[in-house]
Structure formats: structure tokens, C-alpha cells
Length: 399
Image 1 (tube, one colour):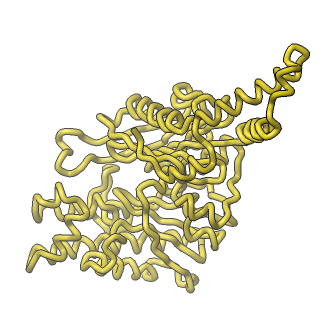
Image 2 (cartoon, helix red, strand yellow):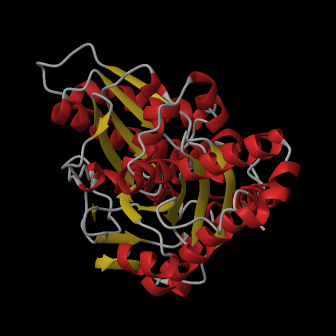
């Protein structure tokens, strides 16, 4: 069963399926009682029940919901939100492979499981939408993933191999399997939309965003609206960066700045990093001595330099007064690794046009469901026409 989040919101607001169905039955009984055959029955209906049934029916008519799913290497992360953008149920699922057919089937099953768990599987068409986001360029209107290339964990590369998609339609098959309208988007775009409603964007209507995970992605919000431009900042080449990238080229920003690049740089240092991942690398920078420790810190410096290139590029492209970046190591802000990484990131002015100055570059933590939440917000707006007006208390509830 999916993990439940904010279960109290569900109970308080009456989203349980028994209450929903009971309200509809009460309204039907009321309507039937207005006929001559039901005149006697109408006299026995308590006014408060009539009012409750009518209110509930109106609430259901106005209700809109969206499931957001984020595709990560060999797993899916999902969340269900209401029309105010509040996150109500979460779920996740591991993937046995990264084939398009399996990802589509698993995504549809996970989304339907969340909707059923919330007691909403009886709703008619037009009340639920689905958003799916991936770490690569997409054609949102056509529902097509233009390019998606991810490598498995370093210690499982020979077993699993690389995942590469070219022009794969996901929107139509997902809609066929769920009967819901579907929005396909880029992961950085989803995270920017999430920041718009639940992060720094609540007080700043224009900002650029840079996210660092396995790769590096970018997005831009202007006057509160997401730019449809593809911002594949991680695939920009730099002569200062020469590490091989998953895309097959060398020198891409994400090949150095992303977590894959960090771990690849350290793979020859110790096999421990294969299983410990980024956390293991951060810990090694604290505990190791001498040459090993220096190699670990050198990898984080290289990654920080790659991130500085990315920040400078976003400023040069958009001249945005604010760049929000989501680095992978904020959970250990005082660690040696974070200190070296962020110090190099602050050299972004070396890669920024001399005409630009006075920009804010601020970090934000990256939550495990933020991408899925952003995907749901995009689906809510693009496919159901709901523009969430989120008050401060709702913004806190949605986190």
C-alpha cells in the first residue's frame, strides 16, 4: 500500500469513499422523494441531511485531483494532490526494467492505486489528471519524451546497462491505460513549478532554477508562469570539464556536477562508494586520511566547478535576479564535502557576463516528493484548467 501523507487532512475534509458515496445516495434519495410516489418519504428527510447531501454533491462537482509521478532510474515516486495543491497521498514503486512499456504500465498502476486508496476511483471523467516527469527534453504538447538517457548504479552497470529513449510517446498510452488526461513534462520544470507554489517562488515571481541529481537540469519561471523553453543546461559542453557523460560525449556540465560524475570520479578510490553512494562519499571525506581524502574532496571541487558553470549559464541566458539551485548535499551542510563543493559553486561569477551583477543564488532542499508534486501541479493546470490559488496555510499543508 502507498505511504499515506497528511492523513488527517483526508479525514477532516471528508474525502473517505464511504462518506462520498453516502452523500450521493442521500441526494438521490432526496430527488426521488420529490416525486408523487415519494411524497411521504420526503416529509421524513431531515433538513440537515438534505443540506449535507446537496453540499457534498456540489463539492464533488467542483473537486479536481491530480496524480504526479516522477520517473527516476529504476523507480517511480508519486503523489496525489487536491485542487488547492495539497499533497494528500504518496506512493512509490520499484521498476524491474526501464523499458517504455514497463514504465507506462507501472506508472498507470501506481496512479490508479493512489486514486483508489483515496476513495476517488468512482469520479467521472474530467475530475482527475495525471502528470509524469522525466529527466530529459520533452514535447509537452505531443506527450513525447524526446531523449532520455540514464545509467544504473555504478556497481550494476554491467548487469542492467544504459537506458536510452528517443522520441518515445508516453502521453497517449498513459491516457489509454488510465482514462485520464495526461501531461508529460521535464523534471526541472516540475521542480520549478513546485518552488513557485511551495518554495522561494512564493515571494518571488521570476526566478531560474538549477537542479543537481544524477544529471543537471534547468527551468525558468517568469511572472509566475513556467517557460516552455527547454533548458538542458546539463548538456552544455565546457572546455574546462572533460569527464565522459552518459550521453556519449565528454565535457558536459552534468558529467562533472551531477552525482553520477562525483561517484564516477571516486569509483577507483574505493569500492565502498559503489554501495554507499553520495552519502558514502560525504562520509569518506570526513573519515579518510591522506591521499584518499584528498581525492574525495577533489571530486567535490570538480562538481562544484561544474555547478558554477551551470549557474553562470542560467544568469547569462535569463538575466534572472534570482537563481534557485537544488544541490544534492544540503543534508550535510557543514561537512568537508559540502564546504568544498559550495565554495567552488560560488565562483559562478567567473562564468557570468560582466554586464550582470547583483544576482541572488540561493540553495533550497530537495524533498523526495517535490518532483512528483510539481508534476501533479502541472497536470492540474494544463489538463484540468485549474490554477491553484494557494494560501499560506495551504502552502504549509502541501509540503
